[in-house]
Amino acid sequence: MSSNVALEENEQALALLKADADKILQLIKVQMDNLTMPQCPLYEEVLDTQMFGLSREINFAVRLNLIKEETGKEIMENLERELSALHEAAQAQKS
Image (cartoon, rainbow, N blue to C red):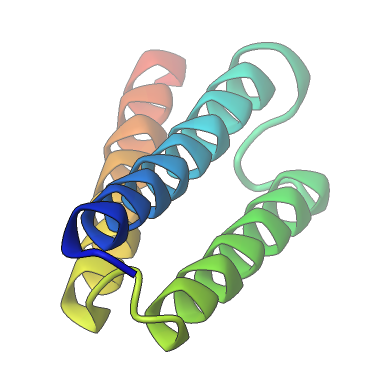
């Protein structure tokens, strides 16, 4: 495999993982706005399931050497920070 093809695959894998992280964030935004409170078990279950799925995707991409482990950790940490900020903003609005 040429290095250009490998680089394109790596970039595509990274883009897909970031898109999946964005989908989780959007799903949680919609759920917080329309459906349930963050203390609701449904909210927690959806969040836990989605985060677990993303972590497995990242692990798989790392094992295939499509992304570095550090990059995968950054994706998860960024998503966790964004979700935390979203949760804090929602709590502040409800107070």
